Amino acid sequence: MNIKDLDLSVLSHFVDYDGHETIRRIEDAETGLLAFIGVHNGNLGPALGGCRMFAYDSEEDAIRDVLRLSRGMTYKNALAGLPLGGGKSVIIGDPRKLKTEALISAVGRAVESLGGRYITAEDSGTNEHDMITMAKETSYVVGLPSAADSVGGDPSPVTAYGVFKGLKACVARRYGSDSVKGLKVAVQGLGAVGYALCQYLHGEGAILTVTDVREESLSRARSEMPGLTVVAPDDIFAVEANVFAPCALGAQINDQTVPQLKVDIVAGAANNQLATPAHGHQLADKGILYAPDYVINAGGVICVAYEYCQRIGKNPFSHDITRANMMAHVDKIGTTLETIFNIADARQITTAQAADERAEAIFRAPKKAVAQG
Ligand code: NAD
Image (cartoon, rainbow, N blue to C red; front, side, top):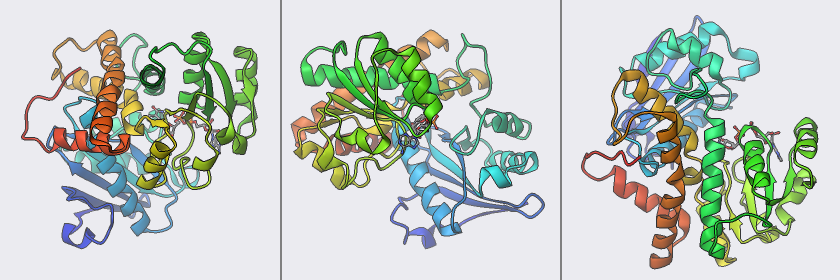
């Protein structure tokens, strides 16, 4: 296996290069592996972020993604109150065609080569089984199976819980009460997170309009959540509602969709919801309250962070590492959003800008105990 750190001075032409600490290139002729591991910033602790496998068109595209995603994890982990930095890994290749046990094992060895500066987890194109494979090669992996009442395991239900709590914080900000009873919520994507979010909302009496490209998810939702309305994927943006919850793809807040939105709040699970920062300004101009994506969807990373701390036997929190305490930590997503909304109002900046500034103030500050959970 050929492992080398890229010369950071030649990465400055990438717009997403932001003083990253390490970009490691991994090539393994035996398994066909070509991957990059990015550590953006380790001020707060080891860099935690998932391992994505995707059919990138070029090495340049993969580097661009690892730069962008690892940086994003620094911001997410900082605002989630975790003693962790930001990192990410990307494997070049279609997971359905190129993924083998041997290739994933090689990724595990590459993660191990960083000696704990980077901790990996599932992301799109990788799954729990892949994490089990990697765990045979490295201890720096999370998202492994665990008992239902312990910390760890599939992070998606915890992400959904955090999005629900964050959405309620937005509702409280906008309407003075956090009750969603009778509120109209349009949800894009009934996957692992979106479906569970709908169950929380339906359970509290919200009126749901949903869409997905998979008919089986829609028919399950129709039978389990009576009263819900289904619309075609392209029609979800124009639904008149209190809240739009994007829970499918990135960049759904864009030039085509912003003019269609007839909601007061955008609060959902998807990563990278704003196509560009300008779309954050456009939402604000329309009077729409936007919950910054990496703040509201941090439940999953909080979940795997607790799993990691429990496994290595180090507790940076001011409480025991239990599932109840982990969920209480996720509850604080609502408080974090309130703080961000206050900063945005006071400084007349967008909520996305306020989140970035607040995160930077945390991870760029001199090293100190940051666990707030
Ligand atoms: P998922 O793959 O389980 O669900 C995505 C759903 O969106 C699927 O049901 C899919 O059919 C649907 N979809 C795809 N294209 C669509 C379209 N054009 N219109 C409508 N529906 C469409 O993914 P997930 O784990 O539920 O994650 C949802 C989003 O939240 C993703 O953007 C993910 O990156 C983000 N996220 C997830 C987690 C987590 O813990 N799973 C954590 C943080 C962020």
